Length: 116
Image 1 (cartoon, rainbow, N blue to C red):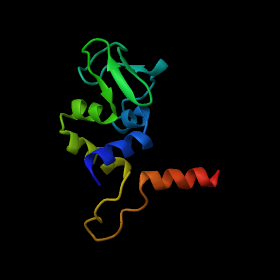
Image 2 (cartoon, rainbow, N blue to C red):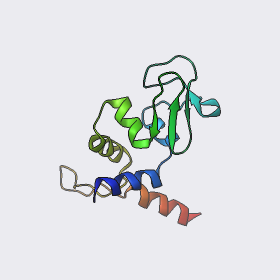
Image 3 (cartoon, helix red, strand yellow):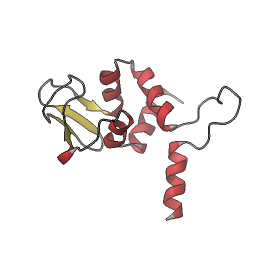
């Protein structure tokens, strides 16, 4: 799978709120605004939608993967892997003991929708 395909799969599978939740940053987010985690802001100047973000103070803006790049100081590829490590969106190598890692996030989501 190419890096573009991985990024597209992340965009199709996750929302910014879910991604912020991965870092514990979405708590009490009134009107999709929180203090900017990128420049460690104190006021609610970081606005986000399902697919992206913008800080009205430091000017940072972008999509899901770019947020992880900026927040964690990672390369694009490393940000993709960090997101996948948490949500298991695409298949990964087996765990260290050789056992499969379980269903991917996308498969769990499909199963949940089918159960409704």
